[in-house]
Length: 311
Image 1 (tube, helix red, strand yellow):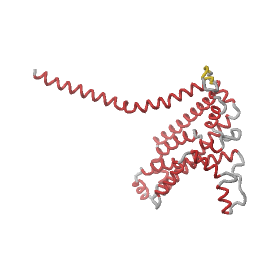
Image 2 (tube, helix red, strand yellow):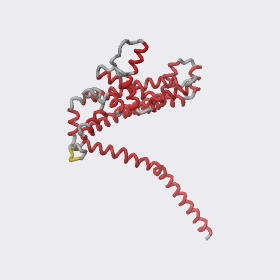
Image 3 (cartoon, one colour):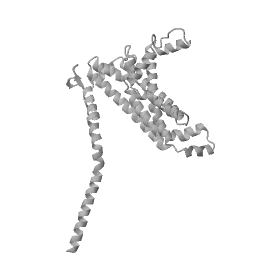
Image 4 (tube, helix red, strand yellow):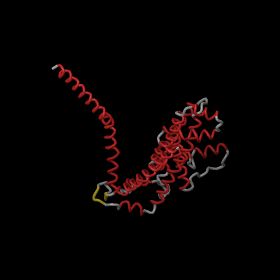
């Protein structure tokens, strides 16, 4: 009788312990459930809707009529301007991401050093990133204005030029200024991503390398770059996504004009959807951009991670 009374509490404790273990297994899923639900509602559902829209006949009022297959994609690909717009998008993305990454990395190396006014310098660097892209693009558009722009005014006051210069004589020149604006507003993001990686590097590694007689560039390529690679990977992948989908800069400065010469995929699909009422084709352009972005970002991440594992 006593033995049974002793074993009963033990079995109860075992059941309670098993219940706790089960709860601990389920607990992580409970905590991430709100995020998963939000992602499903605000990301997956819209993606599904866009894919459905791209394969449907859609009225100008936005009503889905019937299944169209790949008809919208065929219309987009046959458009004479689409090849030029795709080229503009790729050039825009590559130039802005590459130059902002290089310049941001160099600036992070400078800001990682100790000097007077470093906090003020970091605050100044973050300012372009903190302001909205619409304000930045409007400012750049005012700067390069031929008649009232601050660039011409400054150069005239300094006596460098004798008359106002037209800084945007061609669509290519306009597009170049847009890329310059994109680089300017992207540098702070890269700088602070790299700076966070630089500050996590143990100073003793540099001290040991100095004792061994390593030069500045040897320490840069054999210590700094390998240890900062994860931060660079994150900043580059996010930059590819942000820059590829960037809308305000191009739209505020040129709206893709003249004749789609400065359009990117994002501004072009906006025109298709809201100016011409061709929402099915606009959705097809969106899907094409999504697939291009997915492939490019995946290839870069796989290549970078494999290279990191090998090193």
